[in-house]
Amino acid sequence: MNKFISIICAVVFVLITGIFFICKPKHPNNEVIFWTLQMSDFAPYINGVISDFEQENPDIKIKWVDIPFSEGEKRTLASVLSDNPPDLVNLNPDFSATLAHKGALQEISKADLAQFNDQIVKSLETDGKMYSIPWYATSAITIYNKKLLSVVPKTYDEIAQLAPSIRKKKAYIMLPNITENDTMLKILNKYPKNKKVYVFTLFKNLYSKDLIPKETVTMTLSEALEKYMSGNIALIGAGANFLNMIKENAPEIYKQTDVAFQIKGDLGQNDFSLMNFVIPLKAKNKDKALKFALFLTNDENQLELAKLTNVLAVNKEALNNDFYKKYDSNDLMAKARVISAIQLNNLEPVFKTQKKQKEINSLVNNAVQNILLNKDKTDNILNELDKNLKILEE
Image (tube, rainbow, N blue to C red):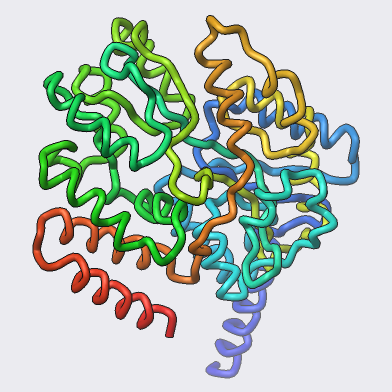
């Protein structure tokens, strides 16, 4: 009897196991699993590109999955550690670099990236190798109030010089969100490494003399925008897309608004933000994923996305289009777009993206807060910062 029961149990186990393997989702050899970050608003565009690609490549199918931005890193990390990750994933460069350092990404040949802006490509290098495909960029411009500013500052030194005159008008020249994400690192990248103390001291002086708001130690770019729209600050460094928000929410301020090149430091370097694609090392269809990524980022598709969203193309040919070269003097959005595109030059950062970039950003931002709040001498705080950064590198 016991033997009979054992046989029945064995048969049942085999049947259940067989059903599991039959029902287990498979990753077809001709299907590219494609993840984006919060792009559902542009579903007609994405689906259109997918349809065009599949018509040209009938042997390849694209399965698109849109992920909430807040879940992107967590879900991507879990997927790349599994044996069945997506084939193509939309990420930011910092997290892409982290995954590359962990050995989780497929290396991309530099020859495959010839269609992109050379400096954008160079900015994505990790230890001299490529693991990312650029998708689109933004480059902050100076959005300023013409009634408050008769002279537009070009450098942070000029910001400091003009700040007292703006304060006399019961406003502030700016609210720099220097404790948010990598804002301070972007500013430091505009100066030689030996001028780090100078940069921190410049902002400390502005803060201690009430020439920038006390909220500088905590406020974000979104909150700075609110201050600009209320007429309390003279300028803001932000992407061209912020102009639409000003136009819709503060039409009177928009009438007083103009745009100029972003504020620079000694090096004349421009900062920018970028979104890219990566191919997980364990992806099943790497070659097909790369083919689709390069199709998605060709000049035609880049221009279409740019016209829908006001982001910057990173494709060389697209950037050479009149869309990024010419503008009507009465079209503020077009002027901002052309300025932003010109700024996709001289991008080489002083501080390269590191394996623990988030922790680095956090340490730098904590140092900024301590310096502005005068918790210790600037030199002491920066020496402590250097020690902590070295520990992270070990």
